[in-house]
Image 1 (cartoon, rainbow, N blue to C red):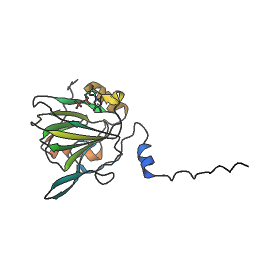
Image 2: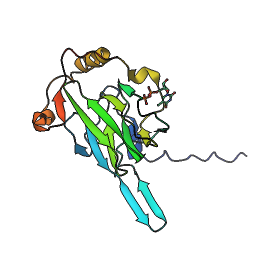
Image 3: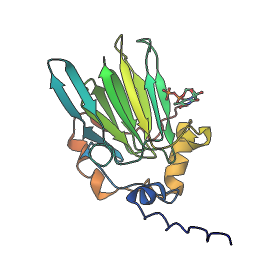
Image 4: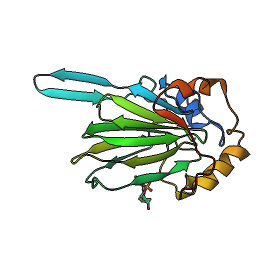
Length: 198
Ligand code: TYD
């Protein structure tokens, strides 16, 4: 007589599944220290140093609020190169500069802010629907990007007008309490309504 098949219990429900099950088209909750631009914040990474050198640590929930499906790095970038020039519909990212530095311009459709990133433990968390431009790279810059999803060209908005249209379609163009007071920040300025960028 055949042995009865072993029935395994279902896997325990895990918070990881909740993270990945976020419905498409929704913006994840804030995380980190707000900037003057919506959906952009600073995250403080951990540094563990001794005489043998330093470790820079980014851990789920402590420093990064999403599961990392992909890592890529910006390296060998000429100082006169302009990178970025797009937004993402769903992708979340944390940018960390491990060497050198560059200027990151972020834009939520209403306000723009220029951030010079050159500290190894000061990451920038970009939630979906943030227009970004990267420029003024110092020689030898190494920027690691932690991303919530694998590469998907269909997630990009590579045209500023399409970005604005998607903001309107998702009701993200309306002022929110989080944006009040940003005019007082010197490095934040309103977006020119006539702005056209590709
Ligand atoms: P892009 O994201 O536009 O670069 P950046 O924002 O740094 O200027 O990507 C440049 C090219 O590389 C583009 O053709 C898409 C491709 N690419 C991949 O194939 N996989 C990836 O993970 C990334 C980030 C880009």
